[in-house]
Image 1 (cartoon, rainbow, N blue to C red):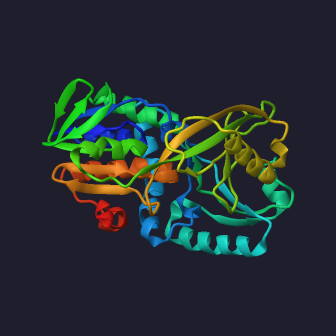
Image 2: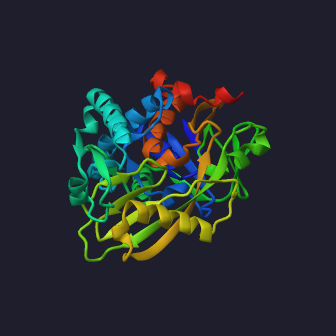
Length: 362
């Protein structure tokens, strides 16, 4: 079976990899446009701390459960994923918020052993794990939360796919009738097409008359340098907002991110966006005030009207793997596996895809 995958972000790279694992002939087409969400994203893997209701949580929990297996599989093939379990902390100075988080996490962890153990931490204990934290913030700690470098994981999936014969074409793509894909001057055909073009998915499908309700949501995320600090084991920090902090080895702390709807594909670091990120980061972790500001990345999340992704078949032979919004690095690696299974006619868990069916918008 020959499958054309449009897009090589996390969703497209994972789909191509899993298709190749099952013996499919795969061609990936990507325009390599600046602003891909995967390369800009921070990489928190902690679906259990999310506020998703059951419609989205079933898929998210399965995605979190799949991460260790995928990382081990890639490592065995000689490709490092960067995925590590470092724990995570939901932080707040409000007792009611901490109690609600503790109750939710305890319930979820009871049904998901991979989530780890749930522990209440007072402010001093929280600062022992994440020293820059504000002194008034206590935490609920979840030991199974992880982090991943999106750029590293994407490269690992692409390299593993190439090892298995996947062809990558750098070109703008457009869908045409008859399951044809216009890749620059080349016309590609296959038995199936997977549209995984992220925030650009609607544009790619336009020529075919297929409506894909995805729009770009700009995210700005900043990286700090703390060269004297050993940040390798610092946990993910999750305030009760859409902003967050996480760390990587080598004194790197990442803070983000804005969620700018209506900004289009404006690939700039803006004064307002930078201020928002810094204000939130320094409120939660004033100890970062003297850190170096290494860089600020900009990415366009593929956002849907209801925040859930678009996963499934939309026409004979045409599948969507897009619309992951701010949860792409959590959901997309496992979702790529599901879409590969679906395209190859294999069984997929209905409860995990039901809420994400593209038909909900038609």
